Amino acid sequence: MNPRSSMVNRAEQDFRRFLCQTSAAPLAIVVERASGARVWDVNGREYLDLLSGIGVANVGHCNPEVIAAVQAQADRYLHVMVYGEFVLSPQVELARRLAEVTPGDLSVTYFTNSGTEAVEGALKTARKVTGRRQFVAFTGGFHGDTFGALSVGGNPVYRDPFEPLVPDVCFLPFDDAQVVDRVDSSAAAVIVEPIQGEGGVRIPSDGFLQALRTRCDQVGALLIFDEVITGFGRSGARFACEHWSVCPDILVLAKALGGGMPLGAFVGRPEVMAALSHDPPLAHVTTFGGHPLSCVAGLAALAYAERERLHDRAAVLGEHWLARLRQLTGEVLRTVRGKGLLLGLEFVDAAATQAFCRSALERGLIVNWTLHRDTVVRLAPPLVISDSDSTRALEQIAAALDVVEKAR
Ligand code: PLP
Image (cartoon, rainbow, N blue to C red):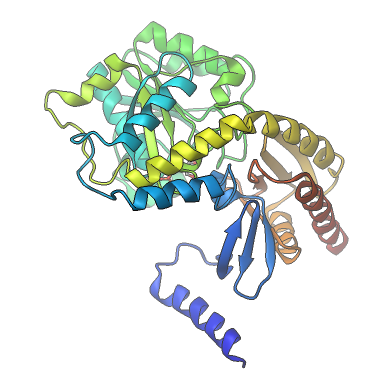
């Protein structure tokens, strides 16, 4: 064995031995570097990333403007104080920009390290604002894996082993406007993904989110939109809720927010967010939430996305992908749905889904199936994917599918 391949084997063995494993079959690409829509392994093999680190790399891996911002900030200061005490210009500036780009009159941001933490903060805020206990959530929904977020996750397979969770969660079927009446005045909040990601890229019918908005207003519950995966242009609008012109009381963000650095946030109106500052004061604290490196990365990513109008690019490219991928449907690939560059390929069964993913990986495409729906492959390429890489990705998807069809 040559020294390089023994080094690679060692890295993979150590990965399996020293890192807590969460999957029986991790993709286990031994990464050397990443740029734009491409990832290279240590053997020099190039992959087209059709997952973006699961919805993170909207502005591309190692976007040069993000890297420059991080490097410049690293020369100034890293962590200096827990969240909410010192005036840190990267946090202030990013919060100001979020007030400008988020829908409606959402204007006050709390920064966290991750999406699940932002969900925790949003749920706590809703209880504090309303003085109520109950949360309403949806089957197939995913909001993260800490206890509160898991408690509103809509798949019992992932909840049951960790019971008891947060009590008083009512689950309703997603995209059924008939059931919104079941939200009543015991609800502190309704939490929903405007498009379900891990649930299999499920796009609600027109009217569903508006029905939730109306019902929340009637009963005095807060409406929380979890746009952790759909935010920042992914769905072909800056935020997915804009497709239906519905504004939440609290918007939860993460993933692409940090431009590749860890960052989450929940954003609300001033009177809602004020709940965390009294009775008791410091009602929600974090040491690292809104880290200066993450906030400058987020600022650079947002500036880039706005200047390049990546949400428009996602909309145009998404239409093209949808049309092309729908031509491939048949016995194996049953349906294709999507909005912008968040697309779901629904396969006939889990075996076909897995065979497709293996075949795609062999062709240098990074893809995977969704957590709650093992018959759906989610595609979420960087929004900066070039036209030629886009064409290549679609060709390779067709070739990978062909292999699966012929093998059945
Ligand atoms: N909410 C949604 C919709 C997500 O897709 C995810 C992660 O995939 C989360 C919340 C949790 O985010 P994080 O992994 O940053 O905790």
